[in-house]
Image (cartoon, rainbow, N blue to C red; front, side, top):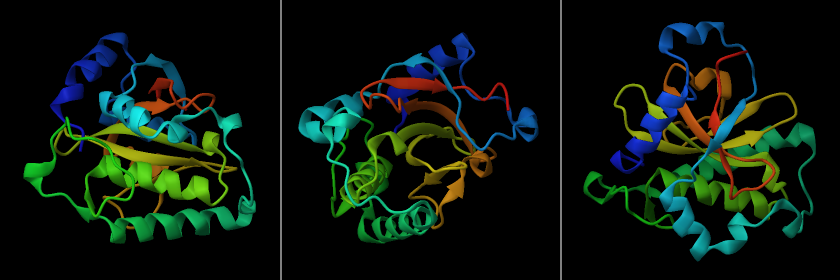
Length: 200
């Protein structure tokens, strides 16, 4: 998980009013979509990841999109990938979960960042468009720890692929567990936004 390294970014977001709504206000939020707020810094680990894997961070039109699943098959596709990667990568031991740890594709053992970027990599290889697959940083309400997930933007809703969950969940179903902090831009994967749930 991403930990104290990003605490100052989260604090800045609180000051700017862009961090997620308090728990008591979540019941009023009904949008199935994530709302993009102000520009935000990309995670430091992501900067290093893009230096190591530049193709993973390329602009959407630099990818050759082919064989993308039909809309009715997309939910099944992400369910399969989420389950397979969650089983394939062994969770890192607590002592190995340093916030400075590099993000890797397809490691034998990894943290949430490795799970998320690997799922995105696999779905891109299956023909998904990059603008439909966005990395996002959240904070666990139960522990305060930072955590990385993958958001898939389907036709009617945003859904969340998560190594802490065996099933893919709709965005709205995660709000009781997570404070949403920032997410990749759908226009350029090198740009990130704060998540705005002040409306919905």
